[in-house]
Length: 116
Image (cartoon, rainbow, N blue to C red; front, side):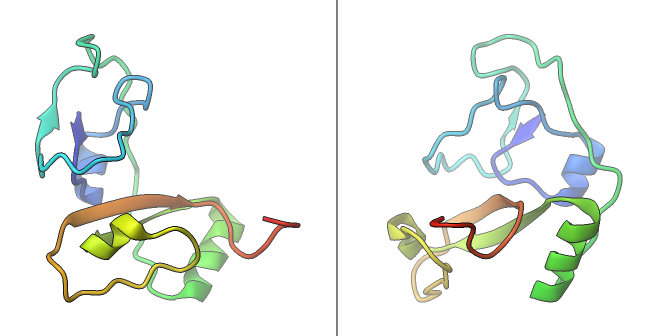
């Protein structure tokens, strides 16, 4: 099952399907907590992936060490209207706007690699 807003405990309990089944769309649907029971094309959900454990990392050094030792991490952040205009660099939310929801990203590393 897929959720628009997903808690780590929900991923551990119910799991996530593939992006082929439920592709990412760059829009806020307003379906907070809505659960999909079928793939976007109407097919049955056949692949579900769950997590075994949850680790809360609170500092940059903890995140870097975890990536070095265990691989990527998933980070979730609160979104405000200014995020819709975000282009690059570090996002620092302007919390004066209306809260829109959450956004999750997969962190695979840090720093600059060549010209990137």
